[in-house]
Image (cartoon, rainbow, N blue to C red):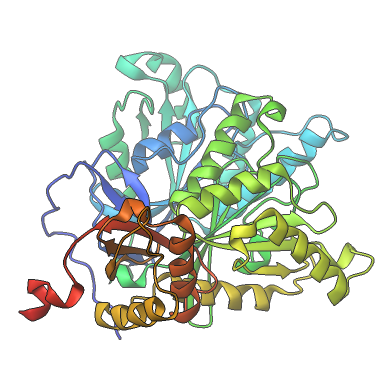
Length: 494
């Protein structure tokens, strides 16, 4: 089906209290998202600059989110942080890059990381339709001059902005940047919003939007979040799936800080991967940046459909893994336990896998339905099985059962295992209905719901899961009071 061209001239919808796009709340709706739309072939705008000039603050201001971590510590952003937003009324794909930093100590791990960040920044710059070069009004540094020289081959795509000029502050210093050949410089304040409208217009002027198409909510991608401890191979898996180097891979613990998004197609389905920061125990989190990274990682559980819980096959399950899994379970997300680095396990046999599987099932007695997959992200072994499993989970998460079929099944379940009937425990189960998918939730109506034992609720939940095709995902059941039989309700009888 050919996608229609979007009409950007149509009036925007009235601002709502909260707009959600791709699962991300937009509290400020001055550049409103169409909550039921998804856009394709968007122009790419990349924010570049040295560390601590305010790139992440500006990214958050333009996207009306708090996606990028902002902190006074230089070099907080390492991997590119991406988001779709409206700028001056036009949809674009915006990327916040890591700060361009010159390496001084070639023997240090931080310098090695700086090189990787610079390489990633320049890779995004080469692909950009527009480069927002952000500068700091308070000083011109060697890193600014080096970055400016790197921008020369792409000068026709560059829009220059000098930050930290709120209320005319530092403007005399800001004009010093004119000597580098800017035809026009826009003085802004990312924090206070000064001149952001003028910057927005400059960013989209001259960009070709003719290839942009729009689709419906049904075409939104399957969103998979990769969570786990540091150094379990999350970024390696993300890169292997997307066939890119979007996430920086290093054995330096805590490399990933922001959530890095990547996209690919698998078996005709659009997939979006959310590569998150490694989650350690609270007492081991020593800096503000890591604290925010961990919070951002956990927040992806509100945005994803499926969680990949990455574990080192040699290390097994940790207390943090248990807590993360509990959070995903409470939200009704699909959960896949991944045993990564399986190629390093000495006895990588079926027997060894079964032993680990039994251990995980012991730790999560109520989650024996959750799939466990062994892979080697580095060698790309087991990834087909992993993605096939993910598609199965997604299909189950979105399965909807007709109420009539549900109640025929309920009648059979009640016949096979009637509710207990004593003077102390007495109730009648009336009917069942599915109230939501993804997460999957059912309401069961009974005469005295408080009298229904937990064991009987578990029985009904197991029957729903096994008999109706929800055997690999969480299923939520809520009991409610009703004295009316399903077939006697007015809406059934017309």
